[in-house]
Amino acid sequence: MPILLYMSDEGSKPGNPRSFSMPSRVLSRESWKIFQIMAEFVEGFERLACISPSVSIFGSARTSPDHPYYRLAEDIARRLSDAGFAVVSGGGPGIMEAANKGAFNGKSPSVGLNIVLPHEEVANRYQDISLVFRHFFARKVSFVKYASAYVVLPGGFGTLDELAEILTLVQTGKSRRIPIILVHPEFWAGLIGWFQGKLVPEKVIDEADLDLFVMLERPEDVVDAIFRYYEYRGFEPSEEEAEIQLNL
Image 1 (cartoon, rainbow, N blue to C red):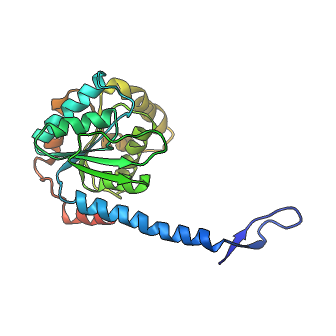
Image 2: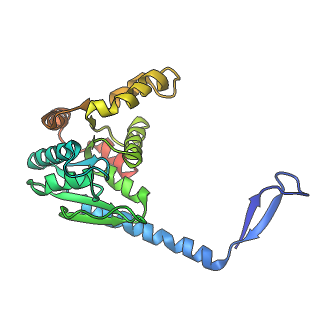
Image 3: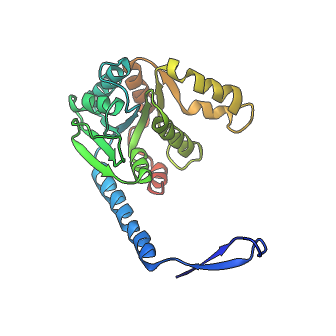
């Protein structure tokens, strides 16, 4: 199939079209990839739709079991599970394992959304429901689509990626408003200070955007904050919110 590209090189003017042909085997492989992606979404939607209400928990894969952050995540997850929330994590080690472990020992399902990586993530053993993704974007949609809250513990690039994702989706109205809780304020203080001292004055975010999240320390406060948010409205999305999540 010929593909029309606009590019320039020596002896041609910028903007002149040049035609290239993509090998049929490459095009075929790219096209069939769509079905693999579709399968990930279908399986994710079918298996996660039944776990409401649920809370997605994030944090570093590098946190050891003897670290205070690990114990903090496990405690939060256990409390959420006993309170009736399914707990969803990335299914790997560190904070993800702690979240699954706490939920696994509680009353509600422990869910792992595992990702295939070249040399990093190994699935933890504390999962009642385990899904495996090859594509980060399909996995990220699954984290958001059925979540009643996001709980974000200290972590690195992956954790920041998930935090930025949910903040962007809620800010732009592409996802319903849910509690977004940053655990251990001391860890997050520098980042939030940068939001307040740089992003707001530069007008790249509104000051009201800082109200999209809260920072808490104690596990019981995390659970209480989620229940307070839903106290008068219930966990089921409104018709408008359901439509938003359908088109996420």
